[in-house]
Length: 420
Ligand code: AMP
Ligand code: MG
Image 1: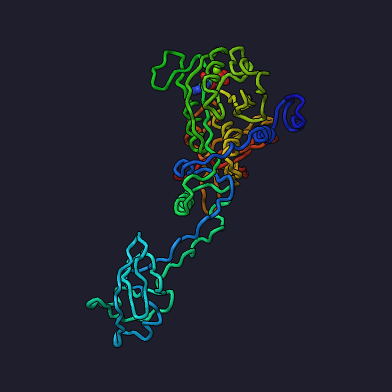
Image 2 (image 1 turned 90 degrees about the horizontal axis):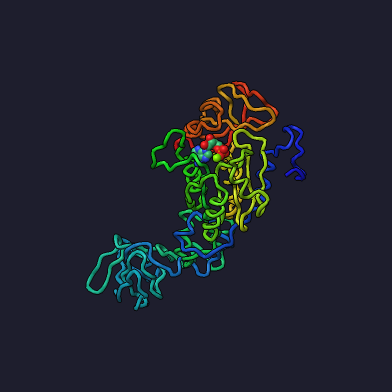
């Protein structure tokens, strides 16, 4: 880290990397996953890797927009309730079948909504304006050519782009692609991310702790955050503070992982197992970011897969996932808008920040008649996970500012909507 050109940030204490630089380094080091043809139900929420182009017209054939009679406009000219025109019914066009009749001069074909227009016909008289007779029909309306006909290619023409490269497939895109005969579009897949929790003190949340033991919370925070970002979390469980055990676990999951996230064990203590396992191995680096919470961070590649060594404190995990992991996961999925929406809000209370570090204060943002208000949800300790659970935003108190007073403006990253 020391030789990295951006670390000489005069606002921050010696040796700290700014949040922006740390994020840039991560983003520069991850690539979007190679595109795959995925069935539509798996492709949902994924980003199109190329322009997806129509190979057919939509609709593919002209069909009727009404139940009624397919006729020639010229044959019913002048028809009215007082002066109906009588045509010979030569057959019917059923939905889902090629018509086996054509409409000749003074002929009509009975037709259902959605059924193909038989050759020769150029408009539809709805059944409400018709009266069936013996092998004939009396029509009371003179529709213009094309009336109630849904022409082929009205929606999409062959060669037109259905979904542009870079677009995320939402519900309407799935429907359109299905209709246009693209059952397995080329998309960037969702990364499978293996999640590990390190710490001798940790137990599963289903267990009852002995004194001093702690139920693993980080794995679940990360699970939810990955799901929310669109990735596929794989919970590998808890690893003791044992270098060999950690390495074994990581290598055991290597084949199925697109990336790894561990929490804990990245500080400077002798038990800091992630650092001990991966420092100067592969190319994982450990550095300190000018932020609170979340200062110690590890990031790099293990066996060619991105590896995040997040700090252990539960709030640090959430905040550093938001700053460094989420944007990178989105990039891996081919997305281009990588940040959360940001707003400017007025603080309702004083918020103090550590000198020379960006403070991410957990807040609830609310829109009032006077604009956005941000209310801190609790103290700043990085172990206070309930302060995140109550929040919907992270207010950023920049490095130079040690006290942002009530009434001052702050930028806030909004990580969920107020209804959620
Ligand atoms: P570490 O970075 O490993 O020293 O952990 C810092 C603090 O976070 C310690 O108090 C740990 O007990 C706590 N911690 C670490 N991992 C977890 C976890 N998965 N769930 C809950 N707390 C954790
Ligand atoms: Mg630990």
